[in-house]
Image (cartoon, rainbow, N blue to C red; front, side, top):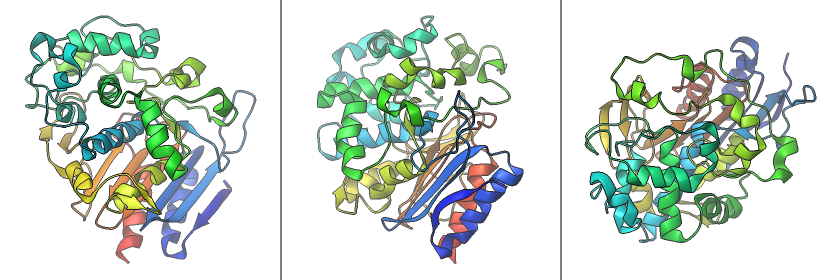
Amino acid sequence: MTDIHGHVDPRFQAVRDAFEENFRSQGDVGASVAVTVGGDMVVDLWGGTATYDDGDRPWERDTIINVWSTTKTMAALSCLMLADRGELDLYEPIATYWPEFAAAGKEGVATRHVLSHTAGLPSWDAEIQPSDFLDHDKLAGLLAAQAPWWEPGTQSGYHAISQGYLLGEIVKRVSGRSLGTFFDEEVAQPLGADFHIGTGPEHDNRVAHVIPPPVPLETAEPAPGTVAARMGTGAPMNAAFSSRHDWRRAEIPAAGGHGNARSVALCHTPTACGGTANGVSLLSEEGVARIFDVQYEGADLVLPVELKMGMGFGLPSPMLPVPNPRTCFWGGWGGSLAIIDVDAQMSFSYVMNRMGEGTAGDMRGAGLLMATMGALAS
């Protein structure tokens, strides 16, 4: 039986029960789950092993791991903060801030299109190599020169990796800081959140190793001629990247963030509380409301799901059937998950090392979320 550490408010005992069940029957190896309500940490649990190279070590309180696309929620938050300050207009053409981006018919493409995966730039026309993921300037420049694959704003097609280079360049042009630096100075440090977009060598000895999924993404065979098939012509994403020090050091705002459930939940606690929590203000109430400005609803051209997309987050839909309308979410390849419920003032996160199949999550995170929602409703 896996030892579970941390604390849970008695009202949320069902979350601990579900967490233990994940280790018993759902194959979890090492993981953490955290929930804040009204700014208070009501669930903070971790357990299992972190599977380092030099033998199994326990998943500790300060263990962190590559959370893949859950990082996107931090990139979106950074853009929302700049918009709230009046420095970035999410509806203004990106070329206003990044003139080179106007090339190839993208004069009207706005940040809102990138945040909602409707910009038509889900991957690169040029052939890229895995090492290119470490070169922000090269990949941002290629996207700036590229024509969209569809009319921006009319369809969503998951910008799995490209979104990070696009948002990263926008944040750099607007704020004068890289997205990783902006996030660290404006979000992580004020909140005391152990989350990093660009993870320094001082953290290497506590980074858990990712356990790759049983079916790698590159083995999928989408229908010929589809956007999903066209994306497959670029360098494939490989879970083994997470073990490379150069990957950790690089700022890859769509997929390279490192943290644990506590740090993810902390980063989104102010948003869950209307913009301010525990003396830290990240957004105004109007800034939080901007998340729920629907940008697209319907089938995605890359993910095998129907989506309802707001500003940088998914919104309640058949993919996330939750009771409160002001709920938003996103998750990472293999199963990590971040949920913000503004109506309940709740921030939820689940982070693990054993990756499940696909990009749409699995029952480990879903079971923990259902237990959390049940406790909130009781």
